[in-house]
Structure formats: C-alpha cells, structure tokens
Image (cartoon, rainbow, N blue to C red; front, side, top):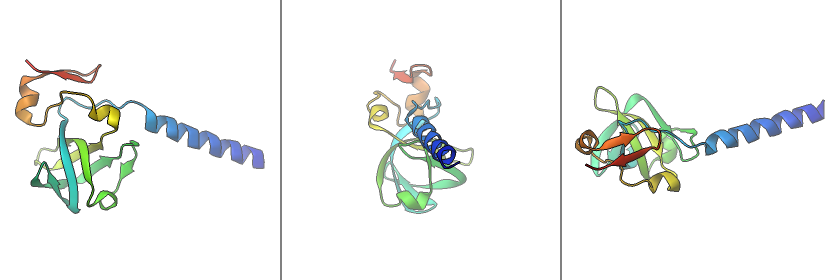
Length: 126
C-alpha cells in the first residue's frame, strides 16, 4: 500500500513538471510588455497605470497560476491580453526561450499590421 501511494505521488509530481515544461502557444491578440503589480488589482503596464480584470489569470514562467499579490513589486516581462472593458485578462510571465522570440508586437497597431504564424508562434513585420 505504501509503495502504491509513493508511486502515485511520484507520477503526479512528474506529470505536473512535464505539463509546466510544455511549450506554450499564445493567441494572436497577445502583446508583449513589462508588468509590475503594485496594489492588486492595480498594475503598471509598460509604464502606464492599468487594472487587472475581475477574472484575470496570471500564469508564471512555470505555467502555473499565480495570485497577483504573489508577484507584487516584481518587474515581469509578459505577454498579455485585454478583455472587452480594456482590463488585463490573461497574463503569461515569459520564460527566457519565449522572451527570445523576436519580433513580438508591443502595441495593437503593430499586431494589426504584422503577420502571425500561430503554429510557429512567430511574428513577421511587413
């Protein structure tokens, strides 16, 4: 019985680690920026005040959900999307491999004029 519990625990831990290491696919609406959570739900995004939506989801570099207070005060390179009210809805803290993908749009105007390949997760400028 003890071996079964140990094996189940080991399998659960290894599957969580494998999921956390899987490549992430970002939507074409995701922009890149620098986020600092000040006093949740208040944040500073690219040097400007912004707000987290009521149902905002922050995923760490390990792809696990983070509570906004847990990352407060940290300067984070992120991809993010807005909801219809203009508040931050989805935030992904970037891993170094994701941050190295260049170019990535930082403004909606760039995203509107560049081309996105969702399979390769690459943007190209006109």
